[in-house]
Length: 424
Length: 54
Image (cartoon, rainbow over all chains, first blue to last red; front, side):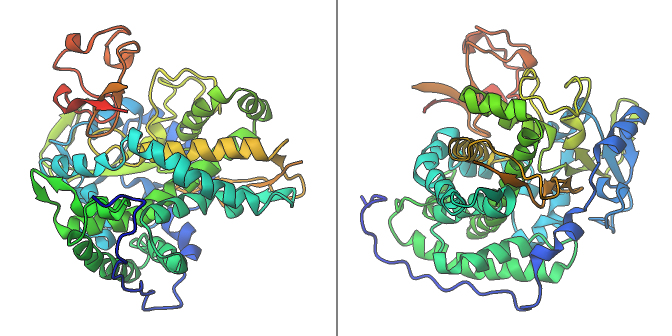
C-alpha cells in the first residue's frame, strides 16, 4: 500500500487558469456582495419583538441587492426556536434556493441537495471532516501555518490581526491539505473569491467555477486511476464511495470548488471576530491567556456573538402552517442565525461578549439540521490553534491606540476589515 | 477510546453529560436514550450514531 510518506508518482496536473477578465478583482467586491452594515442587531431585536416572520429577504431589509430577485414570495424568520424548527424540518423546507446562489458557480453541491441524495453524500463528505480526522491536521498542517505567519510579525511589535494573519491562515491550511501547487495559490485564492460574486456579476462566478472545474475534473480522473491512499484530501474524496459506488465526478468537483472558498472565508471571519471580542474585553483576554481551558469557551462565545454567516435560505415544498402563519409552496425563507444566537430568551444579555456565559444552549453560527456546517470541527481546530499561538507569542496584546478601532460589518457575512494591535 | 458519534455531523454523545437541552439527563446510558431523540446538532436519529475510535 502506498502511504502518505512514501513517494507516489508525480501527478499529471494542468496549471490552473485565471479568470478570462483580468480586470475583475473579487476582493474589492466584498462589501457589495456581503453588505457593509455595522449594526444589524438593533434592527433584528426590534423586528423580533414585532413578529417572528417578516415579508422580504433578510439582506434586502438592509438595503442590499436581492439575492433571488425573481422570487416573488420571500420571508425572513427571526428567533432561535422558529429558525431551528424550520432548519430541522428538511421534509418541508428544502435547500433548493442555494441552487440559484452558490449553485451557479459550485455546480452540483450538497448544499442545495435534499434527502435522500443529501443524506447519502453528506455522510461520505463528513467522514473526511470528523473531529478525530481534523484533529490530526491541527499538529501537522494548522500549527506550522499559524507559526509561519506569526514569525513574519514578531520583530514589529504591531500587526493587523486580519491582514497579517486571519485572512491567510485557513486558506493556507486547506490549500496544503488539498496539495494545491504553491506557485498557483494566488490564482486559486482569487478564483475562490470570484465564485462568490454570483450576486454581483454571475458571469465572473461562472467563469471562476469553470476554471476550477477544468483543474479538478481531470485530476479526479487521474487520482481514480491511482492508489486510493495518497494521504491528501483530494485523493480521499476521489475514492470515497456511496453505497459501494464512487461519488459522481461532478459532485466531488463541486465539493472541491466549495472547499476552496468556504473552508477559508468563514474561519478567517470567525477568527477576526474572536480577536475583536477578546481585545475589546481585556479582562477576558487575560483570563484566557492565564487559563487555556477558556480557549474553547472563548471561541464558542465569539461564534455566538458574531457568527460569520448571518442566515441560510430554505424553500417550502408544500403549504405548511406554523404558529398561526402559513407558508405556501414555493415560498423562500431566510433563517436568520444571527438572530437565533442573540435571542434573549436563550442567551441573557445577548449583545454582551462573555466567555463565562452558560453553554447550555448551543449557538447557531454553524446552523442546525442536516446541513449544519460540515467544516465546523476543522474551524474549531484552526481557531484553537490560532488563538493559542497568538496568546503564546504576542505578549500584552492590545488594540493599537494610534489606529482606528475595528468595526465588524456585513449583512450576509460579517467581519472587520482590520484589527490593528500592538504587543510587547 | 471509542465514543458514540453522529456520522452525519460528528456530534459526540457523552453518557456522563447526556443532552440536557434535548431532555436527556447527565448519566443516561445510550441504551436508555429514546428512539424519538434527535442529534442536537443536525437532527439525525439514533440510527445515524455509531461507535467510533477517536
